[in-house]
Image (cartoon, rainbow, N blue to C red; front, side):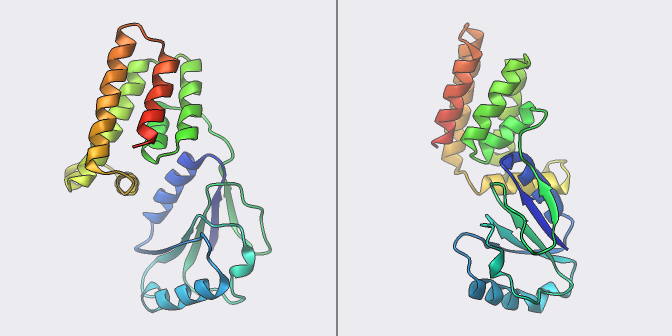
Length: 218
């Protein structure tokens, strides 16, 4: 089976990817950026000696849409997962197409994920949608604060004690790889200042736009 996970809604596509990865015992990953046919064949060969002994998958992240890099004979007994941060045109290879074209049902937790995955543009879009449907600012602040706390826990090696599903822990660990402890502390300070500004009467759209821009640069 070949899974193609792609589209502009990177938060939901990344969430799906993490859930899918958690269903395998072993996942080998390579970057699709500048990945050529020879490099891919070599990666398949290097991974083959241990992938075939478990329920395993081979992941190509940031797949470019260049279908010509795949060899005629694909590895047997191993699922291939392609993840892209944009829409990919379907090629000649038969795939299970999982397209995430637009943000659906915005929630405070999706906004938190967008911020923690450092998807600034997507975070700004979700924030605007949440405020348009009158989502309480304190709920948004709470979700972002919880996300920052969990990622900090992952950076401090204390996430194991959290009562969370396996896929949720995998997501947090992915996010943690994008942050330093210092950046997380700064983000929390910006969040607390934003909360205070809103309570003092500042307009929520401006506050959240500033927050997302500042945190996105950390």
